[in-house]
Length: 445
Ligand SMILES: NC(=O)CC[C@H](N)C(=O)O
Image 1 (cartoon, helix red, strand yellow):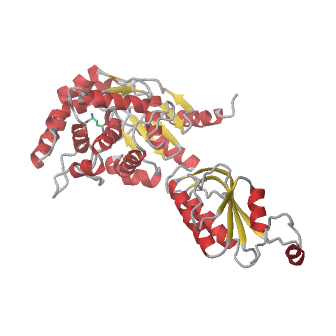
Image 2 (cartoon, helix red, strand yellow; image 1 turned 45 degrees about the vertical axis):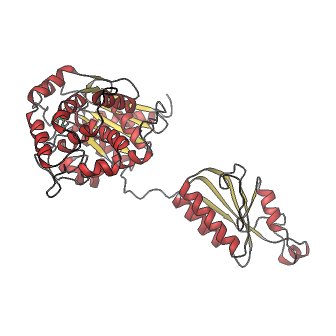
Image 3 (tube, protein in one colour; image 1 turned 90 degrees about the horizontal axis):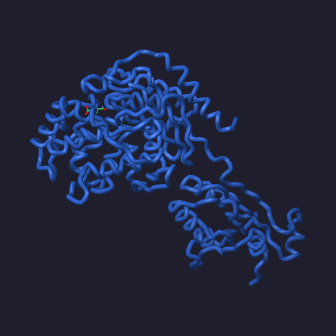
């Protein structure tokens, strides 16, 4: 028994809880989908370290269907850019079903890339060259998101190609509405193939985890799309991924998600995990009944809701008001020894904007009257992002500018970066002792 089996146990428990449920119907408007096993049910979770947890049928193949949409959207954003994609596809929830025959009034754009109209256009925006045919690019990207080579279920493809006139109608409607740089009618057949790509619940969880992990597949380490693209896709999944049920989903489950009519469902916890379920019995909105319930229960049980008050990293900052070589010496004795009282603010962990604010506040609180000198101890900091580095640098410059003697213990050069000590910048030391000693030494004159 391993300790991490506790995670698997939680998934198994949900699997047991919902496996017996027979509500919902198989999709049959694509005839091949009606042949799915209604009892199939699997749940998978991939962590940001690429750890895999699963319960039930997580290796049963099924076609990706609409769960392909966020990933192809990611591809077109990467290739064409947010602004250009945004000219042709909106980012507003449509409040309508996935296959609604409707475009945004005024602009003639599909409402978003998660409904069929927007997805067909998104697919059309993926460049199609002799060197890299559109579908090959799509299959390659989906495979990189999944971390293994995927293929197409030709029977499901043929089945949708035979019956997909509603999507063709949408493509013609889109083409009639505006001066597009691409042809959605030609792209709709590619869209059918993209929907027929075969995946498993484990694949989908890995794909969701890649979006959650800033576009880097946490299992293979492959940087599939840039971080901002992953963030944009998650944002659209959060507001539009569950079609006309998106608001209620965000309210109750609180995670960016995407459903598909073959029974796949993904949800992503940014910087935390990727989740997927497979169960082909659908509710009237076209979402897996068991998947919906299981992810809802999981979110509630583990507090995964995005808007859930995030646990404040209570230990980001420690303030030690006196730390010098004469820790308990009274002021007189300290002065005779030519030493000053030094405050030490110690930060730890990964510093982002929020953590940097706490550090700066603690630096202010550490003075100025009683302890004029202050040391910022970064020895236990593991990472500083760009925003936090800029904030800390300008905050420290303000401190020194206001006359406080300031030193930073930064053995890993995390803050100073390029090693430049600009005028007005604090002094940098490799150890806390040196920093405290420099600060404590009373300057004369
Ligand atoms: N919601 C879905 O999964 C729909 C995908 C399906 N291929 C369609 O276009 O109708």
